[in-house]
Length: 160
Image 1 (spheres, one colour):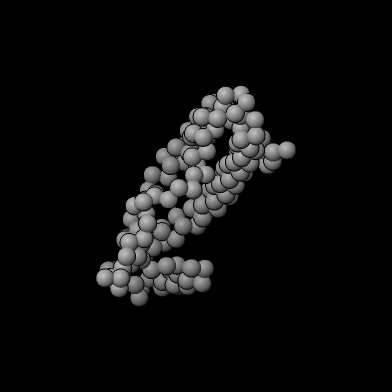
Image 2 (tube, rainbow, N blue to C red):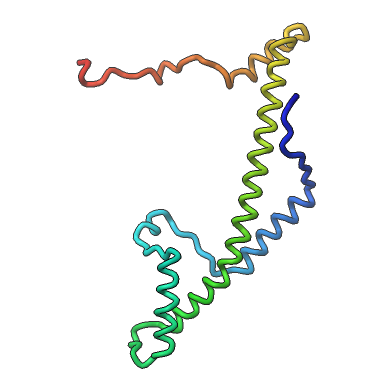
């Protein structure tokens, strides 16, 4: 018997509504940005302990503005901290949702692979009697064990 980890029907209307909701989240947060991998390399990372440090420094400087030189944008740092505090719960909810979507996609894929492998076994077992041998070979290409001649290892310099 085939596994059935999840049974899910998603209508076109549900898919459209979910997509519209995602678009709406993006539109509600127009300042979100994307960083290129190279841009991330040079950035300072703020972990949990560093976040506490940042909160304390910004709080202390806010209480003692007389020591903050004009070249430091304290108001900008305070606004960034407030934005981070508001964005974190949204990030948490999106991560939870994405995790559920990922798990559901994985379960659906596993169900489909399990069913298809069982079905392929049926094609192998009784497909020839039903005139399905050519189709079985076609879909069975996934299991082909033929080696690609181009993929054969080339002799290294030590062989010369």
